[in-house]
Length: 82
Image (cartoon, rainbow, N blue to C red; front, top):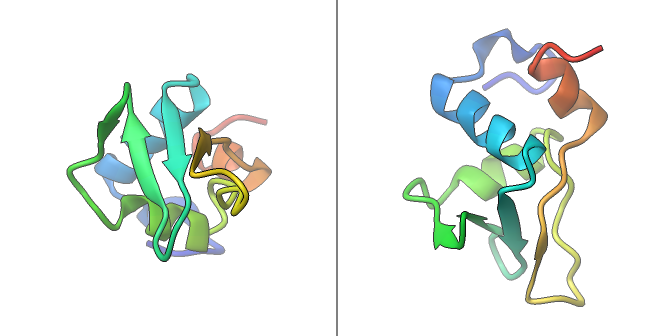
């Protein structure tokens, strides 16, 4: 996955971004962010960390064990939104 150029996002990462954009995801804080989709942990355990590090979703709030996941402006651009 490229951070600056999003052309190399995998299909899985695009699907995860669409789920975050649709409000279906929560993000758990801790030593590595855990992405929950529809209340279930994402099978790709590194997905939350990867998307946060790439700047595509906002990092979790360290004061909350689990909170809503939110997509960043870069994430929206990666999905083709203006």
